[in-house]
Image (tube, rainbow, N blue to C red):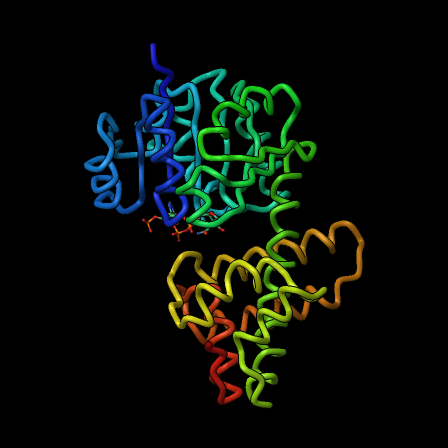
Length: 298
Ligand code: NDP
């Protein structure tokens, strides 16, 4: 008999992840905006749409959430239509949100009282990585939960790593994205100066990518999205700003000074306030271009 799985949160990254799960499990989906769940179900044979979180998880052995932050996950727990009203005893609850460690511990404790195992399982690799089932998955949870989770996560993940107890996956992900944000901001500043000085942008990127300052931003993102001027919308800047804030909070909790990440957080917050909630994360570079009066194209 096919195992039943509930997926909640069909956003930019949730959709391709759920698409892979639909091939392996009897999938029920729930999304805050129901029309998006209906579109998803129409594109994936056999997928059932639930009207409420409670209905989605009733009878499901595995529950996967992929929401903006841990606050939205917490927000789904309670109430007559909430997760806790429907979650089955012994269910496996995997939160693929890029959430925060403290709230993950809270969520794990809430569901553990009902005999439910929880792991934080944030992902990296973007919407392209999700479409190709090639995500990196960073797992926080006890070892037995990790072993139960692994085959589920393998449906969309290529590298699946256990980092430690609940919260460790979210801590790892926040640090990863804080470093991503630093690279984006630093690229925007440095290459605006090169553009103003008249250095051809494509050549400068090629030289950088053959030198020690290269990064995923300059190798993976800039050639396809900035130099071409394509600027696709794949990951909201608001979510990256949230990740840097989580990272700064994590460093504070560990008693580590973080002047650089603090500043990155402030700069990202300014970008978010200027560009709005729907802007893509690489718009931070475009804002820097605008304010510098240059364009980094080639
Ligand atoms: P989106 O903004 O595209 O989608 C967010 C999803 O959460 C939507 O399904 C939305 O529903 C739902 N949602 C928002 N608010 C609520 C709420 N209050 N209650 C219930 N559901 C809600 O985000 P992404 O899919 O891009 O990101 C999801 C998570 O994955 C985030 O934590 C993000 O940081 C992380 N991530 C994203 C990556 C990417 O490339 N996009 C890469 C790696 C991680 P509705 O349809 O109604 O708006």
